[in-house]
Length: 506
Image (cartoon, rainbow, N blue to C red; front, top):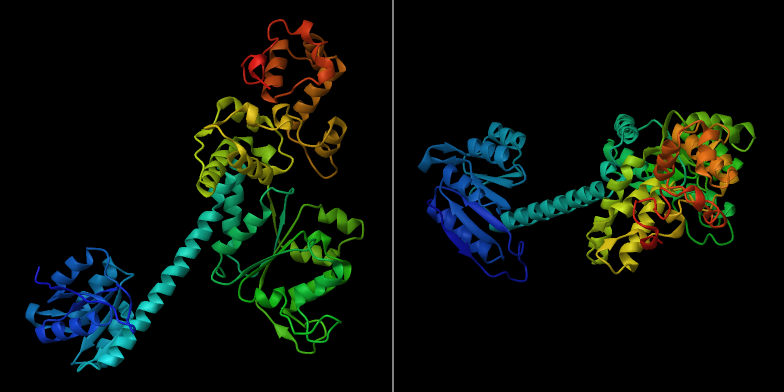
């Protein structure tokens, strides 16, 4: 390779500390003079005579910017052809073309191919240094933005955070379809902790307005008397403490997405005002006279049945239909238990990295209990549990003894049997077969004093089937029934849900 490598020490007015610049020119005087000038500015400089040497230098992988002559007579090449090869193989590399034979047609072609700038010879070194400095600054900003976007996508990757069950795959497909429109409003429904906020972020990041802001606001987190100011902003003097004007959420989200969580908590007066904004894309700040126009994608979420709120007169019907142009339902974790092991491992990897403690994994017995638990707090409850065990634990593995009592006994959270029935058979909700079976088995066992033979007869199933259901749902007898049931458990007495002896189980 006919190339020279020069290094220089950066001065106070350095172009870029350590930036690698490749000079491609068939005139030795140009290569030497530019190398000396740029090395004095703190750059690391390589030179090449023609396209072949240029591509070899680029193959090293660390060239930030190329100064390329338009006419490479020594190798009988056109700089436009070399530019085309650079952009095909290394599209991120900045290219500035130099020429003493500038023609408008060449400039247009170079720009079309991705040339950053087109500069005429003889070169003005101060102008060239300024041009290089600006180009490298833009490149640095672009890389930073790209890295942040990649980090955001990793943090909110729906595949990692939600799982791979059929219901989640269907949800993912719906999210991608919804994201095609940057204007249609979306109502995301689901239980607390099921991941409605993550779905909203995914819709934003997959959409055409992903480069714009994503503003997240919980309507239940701010007192009613401050909500209007938070959402629409206010002018100075609008109320007692309004000493300075303030932009509201709609202005902050202009050009992007506004996510209104817990929309069902919005008071009636603000519901009417929100409806007007959705229709006209304009509003006035509190105490203001000027009409402000915005372009904002609205996403809303709720854990309430908004239709029943409409019937009860607590939510405007016209706003309900305006928000639910595209409804999305996020399934609870108990309806997609096959995702639990993957979620546990994802959170485990995340928190071991963040906390800096090595945890090898979760034992099979503990994972069985985690998979059988009903998770009333959904994914949020699972995430919090894993974080707590990584932070507070001491062993290499998370085992049964590390789990809270409600998971070991499968109590399903703070709900008791009567409350569980009310929740499963709540109006407007259709329970799964597993939920109904779980309730029926648990009810029969308690009614029969945990006599499995009587319970199996009452349920119309074999005793073996009943035992498999008890294990599947991790049903444990209450303390008061454990002694009474012992005579009916001669073939499985002392055996825990995970198959280990009761002496080893908590």
